[in-house]
Amino acid sequence: MTDLAIETRDLSKQFDRQLAVNEVNLNINYGEVYGLIGPNGAGKTTLIRMLAAIEEPTTGEIYFNGEQLRPDRPNPNLQRHLGYLPDDFPLYDDLTVWDYLEYFARLYHLREPTRSRRLFDVLELVQLVPKRNSLISTLSRGMKQRLSLARTVIHEPILLLLDEPVSGLDPIARMQFREIIKVLQEAGMTVLISSHVLSDLAELCTSIGIMELGYLVESAPLQHLYAQLSQQQILISVLDDRLDPLLSELRHCPHVQNWDLRDRQILVQFTGTDADSADLLRQLVTAGVSVCDFHCTREDLETIFLKLGHKQAS
Figure 1: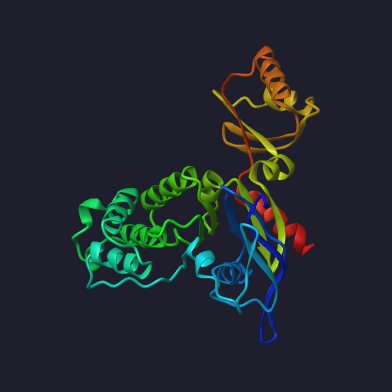
Figure 2 (figure 1 turned 90 degrees about the vertical axis):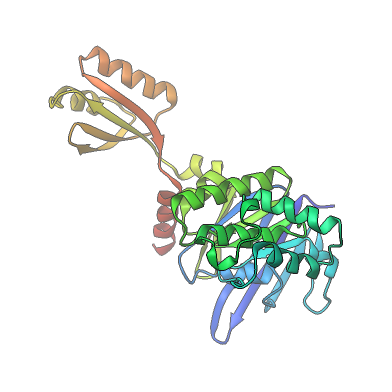
C-alpha cells in the first residue's frame, strides 16, 4: 500500500527538440487538492495529459494508488478511476444537458436505474437541475463549464485532473466552480488542478507545485510555502496627515524592515511574531499615533510565485 494517490518518477516528455517535461517527481497524497502553477509553456498541460494517458511519456513512470499506469498495457479499471477535464473539451450544442450527460454515462456502461440516479446527482452537484432539458447552446459559459465538470465525474472517479477549468469565467462562475471542487474533496476525491488564477488556488489547494521550463521547481504544502516564503505585512491607517510620530516609532522597531507610504496608510514589511505586532500597536497608541486601522496579513500566492520565478531566473 502507498499513501500517494498520484506519483511520478523521473517523468519526461520530448517533442522533437523540445523537452516539455523534464524528470518530474510528483507526489500527491490521498484527498489533496493539488494546484499546479507556472507560466505558459512551463509543461503543465503536457504533464496532466500524460497523467490522463493522452500523451505517452518519453521516459519515466506514473503510478495511481501504487499501481503503475503503462501505455503499452491498457488498464480499463485503472483509467476508470480517472476524471480528466481539458481546457478545450468540446460540447455538443444541439444536445440537451440531460442527453449529453446520458451519452457519456452510457459510454461508462452505467445501467438503469443507476444511470438516471447518477445523472440527477451530478446535475444537483453542479446546480443545473433546472437546465436539464435545455439545449447546451443556450447555456452561459459558466454553466457550460459546470456541465463539463459533471461529465468528468459522471462515472465517480477518485482522481480528478483539471486543466485550466476556470479560464475565462467571471468571478461568480469561478466561485461556483470552487464550491463544487470543495464538495468533491469532502467526498474523498483527490484533485490536481492547474490555473493562472492564483487567488482561486489559494482558497482551494492543500499543496502547490510550481513548474518552470519543464521542471517541477517547487512542490510543498501551501501552508509550508506561506511559512517559508510569505513575508508578514502590516497595513496601518491613521486619522490625520501627521506621519512623523508613526515613522519615528517604526524606525525604532527592530522587526520593521521597510515600509511603503500610501497617503494616510503605510504598508510595513514585518518580521516579528503576532506578539511583536501587538507590541508595535501598543507602542503606537502610547506614542499618541492616531491609529484607525492596524491590519496584519501575509504576501499572497502570486507574490510567492513571482519570488520563486525570480529566484530561478537568477
